[in-house]
Image 1: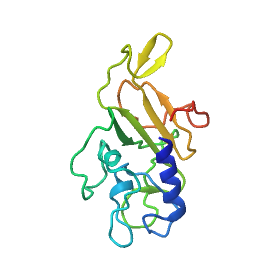
Image 2 (image 1 turned 45 degrees about the vertical axis):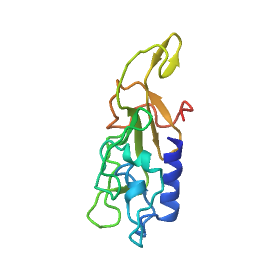
Image 3 (image 1 turned 30 degrees about the horizontal axis):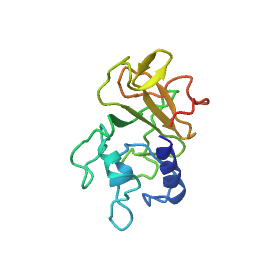
Image 4 (image 1 turned 30 degrees about the vertical axis):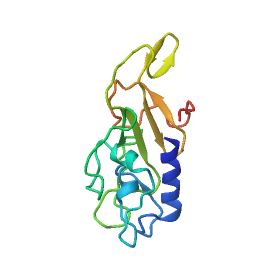
Length: 166
């Protein structure tokens, strides 16, 4: 998840989509691979395997026709921040709500949730659970058990303090 935060910093600082606006990509994970640059070539800012593990790509990107589970997990864009405001906005007037001038949120959740299973997932005392990981513009990765569901809203209480999850 920290790699996603780093990719977002690059997007913001280098204007990877060439829209002339300092903004974050908020639509999906696949866009970091498939959005076209100024020359019409895919950006490929992340590995194709990670891009293909986007559970709900916002568009059809060349070379990413098939969704694939990556190491047991899928990526998803979180739709709303902790205040209920959409992460997606049309910052550059192109009619597409894909970026945000100040915020983003993404999660990585188990493709097949197994709940508490000895020997798998993240250890908590005598229990082991499969967790969902998430990150926002602050760059601190968080984790929690969501029952194997992707986050649609940024969880309350996870905005300013992280637990050091990767």
